[in-house]
Image 1 (spheres, rainbow over the protein chains, first blue to last red):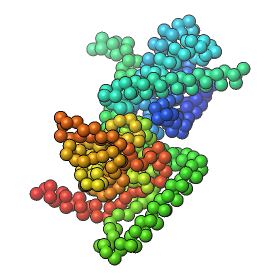
Image 2: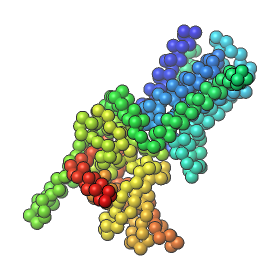
Image 3: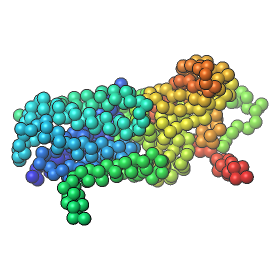
Image 4: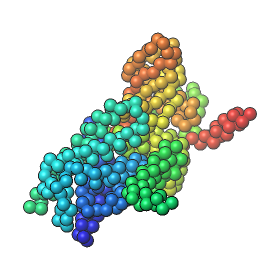
Length: 170
Length: 270
């Protein structure tokens, strides 16, 4: 239990720092803004209570907003993902029984399930975020493409991080 | 009443979710009305100094390019001195109402719908809200919030930004807007249709808004489509400022601004 708290706290700090100092400055082709910090919510232990998920989503969103000149939009999309997460866990990985050793990772739930799970939630997050940011519908397709490309990039980064973690553990 | 409590308890997660999302929406709308306080929050000491130490590290990788900019600007200034010396005897004494405060950009964004910069100068250095920020290449934005040591600047790349501009060759007025997602291009709107605007014409600030001094470079017209049915046309312009590589900028202090505003207020009151 303590170890899980420490691991997640560590992950929180690392992801926030990476987001602020690397990925917020990172603007590939002027169109791709990855928001990798959402990985923190995705990887929280399965048995995390729902209320805690929401509050952690709020705190994470607030911290990111605080450092990126945008109050509210990261909170909104992160809390949304935190709320939807249990639903997706139920449908995408139904076989998984919560237990002390069970973690959401490629190794444990398989590549396909992991890809679907992260893919959908990352896209929901990015899509909400970009729409709230631009706050109008006249650029619907622009924003959609923006969200799709950025999501794909974020997902690739998440997958790479999974393999790095996985190989180090072995 | 009991049912209500039962209902609330049964759906407590949903209500917590709703509650948090409503907080987020309230924060968002506050930010949009530019009350300043929320933006000022993010200008606060902590995030400011964190960003500052980060940009301190990153700076070293950029020294060569910055040097080049400085050399170019030096050359430009030297040229102006020569020109100035040549004409000194014939013109009225030069305008000294503007003073420049050099500031370093410690955080910047260009790919959002509302872009802001943070500079390492604040109240202590004489920065005030509404001060124009320019670079050696052209306009950058205007100050929206200041704290003791830092200030937040609303970039020209902001969907609420509107700058009074003019076409350099014939002094015709128009407005600069930014509503596309391209950080290199903006829109020159409200051009009367009889105006002769050609691709390549220089656009500068008009000085009418009382924020920007007159004659600051904005960009050049890149594409101009005349539509016969409308009396006001718009053109695409390419900004002279490369917002992606901003490092050192100048805050322009207008020592007569208060006097000008007072006079304006007096006129409006009558």
